[in-house]
Image 1: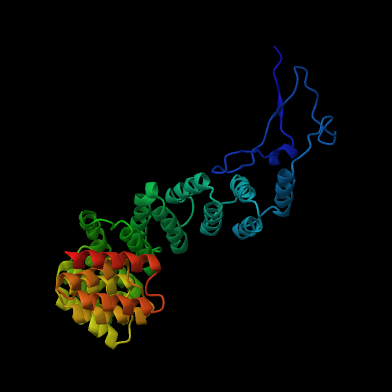
Image 2 (image 1 turned 180 degrees about the horizontal axis):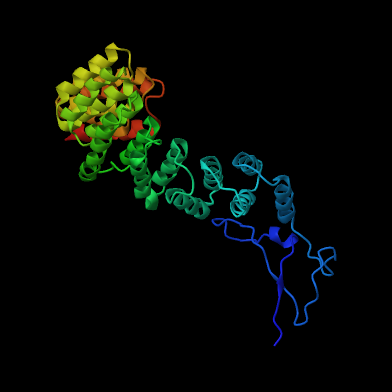
Length: 378
């Protein structure tokens, strides 16, 4: 029985299989050419009698492979991948070079190819590359790991994987977490603070990150401290929030408008309106402008405590700082006045607000006016 021999031409090493799925890389792979039952001796100089027309992608791939001369370095591969307009071609170059002798990708090439894959929505190959990095395919690098953590935290199924990379950084001697690492993780956790009962679950993780940041000697900036402060305020843990607020000066940071706004909002939601109002006054004394949500919750809180004079003053202060109250805030103040037998004041205030440029639209005005007329008839 005759034995079939297989011969591989140098030309077929660059053949690329076209994959219609954009979430998977187009990886160059050699194809075997089988001879017939009576093989002839292979002569590399003999032209192929039935040449196949190469696609533009294959031709472009071959051109770049020829530019990578023997002994190419990761820097050469990085330049080649960055020069590609087609992300699949960059992935093919990455995979082909990984198969060459005496060559190994480093953190630079992995960082580049993952960035290309993610930016071009090749999520399947990107996640496969991330798993390779986690398994130790290249040396640990802070910029690379931060980039991976950012991607993992943006994808719900990979959320925990982002923290796995963080833990790996903690165990590493040369790749400790940076302030950016902690900021990425804190931001990801804050996005899950959508309900009060859920907040308490993730507040423990925020506390742990805060403690580990201190223990590792990383000096937080205002942005990181504001994220921690916001987490405490969302959980209405105001004692913890004030501790963080007062710690800012120890790190050489100065509380900004967001810091004060989180505290004001937290105190009002906690029912401690007087304390929230005091921080608001301190904030305005330093020429900081509160966020719209801080303004509105304080206005509503004051109105519900029948402190209408202060609520009205804050409403005009808000409008003077190019912040516009929502319909609920207007209704709380105006209808509150009306229920307290001060209907004339409510109608007069509504007309004053209407004259303020950009204070409300016609639909909002009609809704408020109808509400006041309804309460006046009761």
